[in-house]
Image 1 (tube, rainbow over the protein chains, first blue to last red):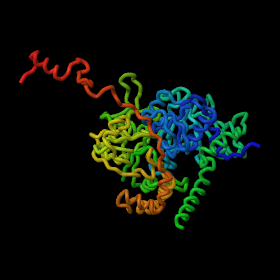
Image 2: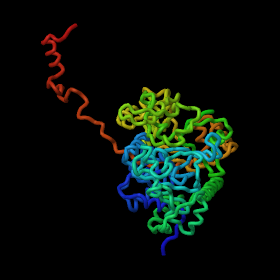
Image 3: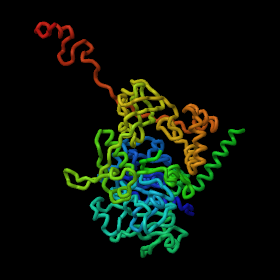
Image 4: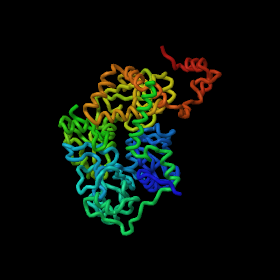
Length: 273
Length: 279
């Protein structure tokens, strides 16, 4: 019987399947690194994994704590600096990058900076980081959203997707042709962007989720593919990889914090004896 | 602090969480200017090389990073026409911080600072700064530096002070010395979600510790030294790069000059004979 899997695992595995052999990938911390590590281990052995801190061609052995965590791998092939990691993207040498999303609009424009007014925010989010430059120049960008929201109007426009849709991104003359977000992964389903209108549409739903349930999260009339399918189930091999490489990712943040706190407490009690 | 230029602000605790920066912004006591990682790094690269500005990637021109400005106003970005292609070019002004405090793996007593791993902005941030304070895990012999100059990011002549501080980056990591202390790191971000808990943390771990040794002593008393042993790095040494050469003297083992094939005495005699010497 095939193994059961968590939604977090499904997301990671769906992302990993978007990485092809021989590609150059910029990875962020969390889901992307696990997806990258899986792709390299299982189906893309010649992918070059990169982090913007200048760690190039690495094979993570444990999930990195941040994008400059060289302790997560046993050496790597090329040590360069942050400036060069971005200019290599600018010059077209990066095939795929991964970005997290807090707010997204129908054309894949992204906010990761504030909720509310920029000068007087309700919540101050991390900000730009590497996102605006990577999504501008990577050949494709895979977006992930866990706990974020679909909005008609971004509170702050941090990273450029397809701007006003259609050919408006190309019209600016600022971006390489064909670049921009290629898919959005959420905890409920998978979205892609229409070739002509550049509007996002739903292509796959995760098990236990309905199209109607997803529509409720989206404040505009969501377009849906004619042949919406259920997200392909992960293989046992893929599930095993996630659990061995990134057990805390497999269980999700809530269970990690719960068990982590218990573990700290238990250690403290043992010392007290 | 009333002004902050930043590219990324950690925020813990999801919707209910928060950060010191968020609280200050909400209270109206802090003005903040946002850049991308690359853009702020480019400001430092300009500063490091003595240029007044740096070209950056033009894509973010369409975003609110470009459109929404705080205290820097017009000087946050300027768009110029490239003098060669005529293309609209986004630029940022040079940054030359007053002081950079940087923690590295090792340095010599002169201040030559060696750092390896994720190079990130370490060289640019240091070298752009007017004063540089190097703290390091170990002060090593000058010969170690001399035989591995590719690891030196900051040369001695730029360094104002060097200080040996073992565990100086804790609870974050230093490659080759120790890993990030996940529990302590998580604890800080948890405490940072409210002003009151952050104050407790700062009183205990920063203001309550007169120096770094006191901080480490307090850590060991609280969590035990086995916690530190668990994050100590195991060796995985860089293969030595051979900086050796064929010889280290112009004179061979027989005392002959390698190009002319004569001894020093013979050479001096000939110089005398040819009337080349004065005085």
